[in-house]
Length: 147
Ligand SMILES: CC(C)(COP(=O)(O)OP(=O)(O)OC[C@H]1O[C@@H](n2cnc3c(N)ncnc32)[C@H](O)[C@@H]1OP(=O)(O)O)[C@@H](O)C(=O)NCCC(=O)NCCS
Image: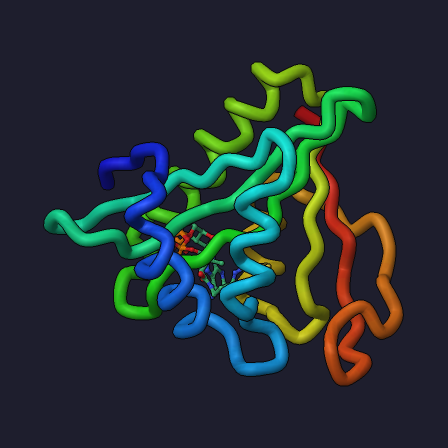
C-alpha cells in the first residue's frame, strides 16, 4: 500500500478517520488533533488505497530523550489486516531512528486488544499501566520498543 507524507489538505480526512476509529471518549477533537500535529517535529504519514487515504500515523521524535512517540495510528475498519498499519509503523520507526531515537513509546487503552496484539506483533512490550489515563478513568498501557 503506498505511503506518503501527509499534506495540510489531508487534515479533514485524517480527523474523520480518527473519529471513525475511536468512540467519543477516545477520538480527538479537531483542536486536539491540530495540537498533536503541530507539536515540534511531529510528522504524519498516510496510507492510500485506490487513491484514497485509508490510514495514517502521527509520530514525533524527542531527540533530547532519544525517544520517539507514536501519537496515534489509525486504519479504517474496512482496510484492516491488509498490512497498512504495519507499513505505516515501519516507516514511522525508520524516521524516528534517523532522528536519533533509540526507543519508541506509545500508549493504548487496556481494552484495545486488537491494537495491543498489533503492537506485540511489532515487538512492543508493556512498560507500565497508566491508571486513569483516558477519559472516564479508563486505564492505559505504556508500551515500548527499542530501536
Ligand atoms: C491497530 C491498527 C492500526 C492495525 O492496523 P492494520 O492495518 O489492521 O494492521 P496490519 O494489517 O498491519 O496487522 C499486522 C498484524 O498485527 C496483528 N493484528 C492487527 N490487528 C489485530 C487485531 N485486531 N487482533 C489481533 N491481531 C491483530 C496481526 O498479527 C496482524 O497480522 P495478520 O493480519 O497477518 O494476522 C488498526 O486495527 C486500527 O486502526 N485500529 C483502530 C485504531 C487503534 O486502535 N489504533 C491504535 C491506537 S493506540
